[in-house]
Length: 372
Ligand SMILES: CC(=O)SCCNC(=O)CCNC(=O)[C@H](O)C(C)(C)COP(=O)(O)OP(=O)(O)OC[C@H]1O[C@@H](n2cnc3c(N)ncnc32)[C@H](O)[C@@H]1OP(=O)(O)O
Ligand SMILES: O=C([O-])CC(=O)C(=O)O
Image 1 (cartoon, protein in one colour):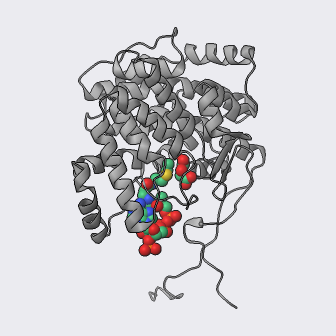
Image 2 (cartoon, rainbow, N blue to C red):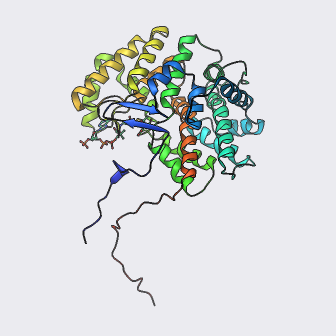
Image 3 (cartoon, helix red, strand yellow):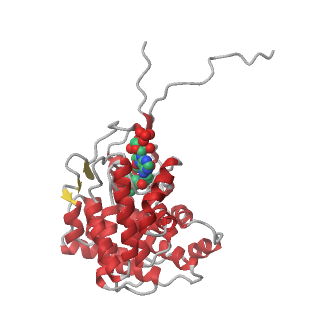
């Protein structure tokens, strides 16, 4: 009998269907519920995109107003949760704080184990509302500042920026931030979404699935790359050092964060839109030197390895120029991706099958303990 083929990393393995989004590397396109992500970024607010991912259609004005009212009512965190998060060590990574926050919110939710579509949709919306407040808490704490109270007179993106940075920036910065959220919202069976579906497939609860997904997103081969990109730019120092830096890094067999992708081999469909948003932010925030490094490293990487940037490459420097600290970048990704994760959790439950792949044993042959 021949040994079964091993699909390391599940590369290329189709494990289910999904109606949430379609990634097409051949046409370099990404659609959410059929809409090109570039069109959504250009014409829709992030709240509308969240509605689309959850419900399958863009909202009517009344549906959006209803969702917004609930979202705005759930932005504030329970006082005990704030105290618990502030009691974590100051050295805790914001992703750890965020993961802890979701876990505590679950433990306190009387509906935690209600896996009906309505209950899970309500939980998804409450998490969507609360996560920016947690992310902002981590940002302000890093600067020795206490959390601000959410403002229900502001839209999602404006309130997020206000809570984190202390004021609402000019509309072009808000728009660039919102663009990043739309682009980060969903991407089919990526590692963190698949993690959330694996947890859900055991009929566990939504908070457990999201907590696990946050853990998966934290790694530098996935969402953590947007932070690592900024660290790379700091190491490089100036654009004229990019080529030399890259040769050394590749000789040391380092992975260059922000480049390459499991699915896109000809470039990430989201990069041109985010590159444009980065340009806008760079012009308003004196970011030309950073843009020079961005272009120099991208050119050198293509010349050396033929690899294109992924979404984390422009998103990292954009968040830096907006005023976020580097360890807060991946938490922003979480706040966006909660929409996609929870849409997939609902989809998984609607047609569930326990996710449990097989493996080929490579250990010791069967043997006896050899004791009487
Ligand atoms: C939003 C997101 O999560 S997008 C992804 C964010 N992650 C990153 O930016 C991390 C850096 N990139 C990588 O590590 C990879 O490109 C991944 C993990 C994203 C995709 O990996 P895979 O599809 O498994 O590609 P794989 O690792 O097989 O790479 C193929 C070849 O390209 C090389 N390669 C791929 N990406 C990189 C990179 N960023 N730097 C250096 N070499 C790379 C690999 O070393 C490998 O070379 P080899 O054949 O000589 O061994
Ligand atoms: O699809 C992937 O493997 C990673 C990615 O780009 C994402 O999750 O946005």
